[in-house]
Image 1 (cartoon, rainbow, N blue to C red):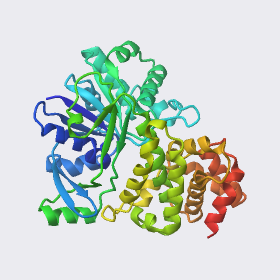
Image 2 (cartoon, helix red, strand yellow):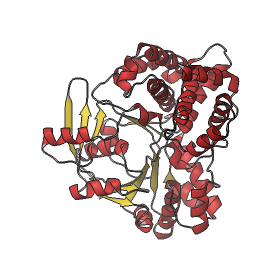
Image 3 (cartoon, helix red, strand yellow):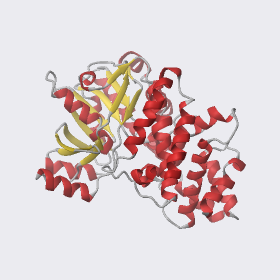
Image 4 (cartoon, rainbow, N blue to C red):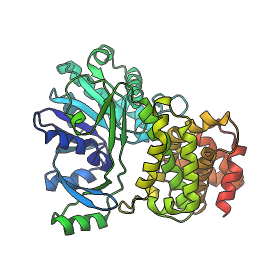
Length: 440
């Protein structure tokens, strides 16, 4: 039975890659299984192990709800408990694919260079000890063991929201190898593929209300169900090192060039999500469907998507309008209860790929850009959290707290927080507007 190892098992993976793989298995032929890997916490393993790794996928449209029983994972490994087991599973010749959803911050990318931040405490410590802790570290150590044992081909598929994610991950692997003095260059060039991919499905966090709903509607006492929308999309570059599930027979699009699809999703859906999250939270909303129903916020989202659409490659320009219309309908789905706070987390990293490229592409044309407003709302949201003494869910949160404590004024704090997002941004374009939003 061919296998997939998935690094970063969470709700999105279970509603997306796992769903496509189970559907492909249902067609017959080779039955693929997935070994999930939690890099840090045993929470998912502890919830799913007593259920034999079964769970319920709850697919919610405006008019109907469907409950699908999922059984595609053979086990879940917890890397912090057994690093050797994770390396061995990546090295196993039966493993043909490794997929990843570790969020943007999980790759330890230096914001200025776009390369691996080998000086970060986690990466530096694991390289010094030659003991993997990060996703990239486990991948490199697994590839080294794989090359030494049998050298079978492997396809590595990044499913996170990074522009050119496959090539980015490939460069991070090479950076890690250089820092750790591990040479797998020939093996990677000949036997390992890093296709670009674009993933799209809205997947909220699991709540007690969802657990109660599944118990009531299905009779299954599920500790870890997942809810999602009916819409789903997965586009993968046709660049595989070996075998794969029959994903293309169950809705996955295999193409020569993923970039246009990727940019459309990052700049329209993800960019709008970030604006919705910060503006919605500032306006007192909790869920996406509440924020998009707010007329002022809806108008901002419409303008931002219209701006972003003009920066897209010509191959997807014609489809952008219909794509935006569909997004508004998806955002308005009241059945999902998608938390704005979930989307707002890690904003300093998310905006760098969702909003700043749009801003950069449009600034030359001048005028008041909604992309600037998205940055200003993010800045205002961070300042409000700091002002209220609330936790800031962001990898730069400690810097934000220190900045706010040491700043002589709110304006000074705003300038320094903005610099953490991108030191090249001209503060005058954003700080005054952010402080105006904050004062309302």
